[in-house]
Every structure is written in C-alpha cells, then in structure tokens.
Length: 125
Image (tube, rainbow, N blue to C red):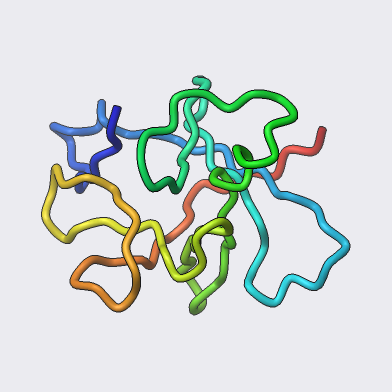
C-alpha cells in the first residue's frame, strides 16, 4: 500500500483520507517538536519511516515503534512539518503534482514538507 497525494476537487472527493494524530507524552524537553503518531482513521494503517519493508510491529519490539513516531513542528502560522524520530533529517513530503507518492525525503527537496492541518478535533481518552 502506498499513500498518494491529490488536490481534492468535486470529482476526487472520494480519495479524501482523514488521519488520527496521537500525541506521545514524554517528560523530556521537546526541542525537536511534539512526538506524534499518524494513523489513517477507521483503519489499522499508520504512516511509518523505514529503510526497507515494514511488515508487522509486535508488542515489546524495541526497534519497531519508533519508526511510527514523527516530530510535529509548527513552521509558521498555518504549516507543520513531520520529521522522523528514528531517522532525523527525514521528513514526510509530497510532490507538487497529483497522484505522486507521499514519501520520506531530506530537506531541502523539490517536494513540499509543509502541511496544513484542517478540521482538527481534540479527543481525550
């Protein structure tokens, strides 16, 4: 499975994906941003940064969960970036053209690493 970016219009609204962003709470100073996990709503799918295939993550695996964590950092009044916790310097990016994969890249790149977050809701559990 691969996530692809598309500019939504009336004919492509069925491709809209909502993410649930879970905050990782830590007592350590958050100089790099807020650690978050990005899951695709109503599924068991998550965004991960890996070098190679990621098949499953098992409970108690010390090397698995950190590939699911990203530092969310606000880069202006409306934009955020998502940097891999496991691989510093690698960011979630999208191409400027539709139907290209959402991929991890080092910045600067000819892709965008700045995202706006819309329809945000805080859910406490």
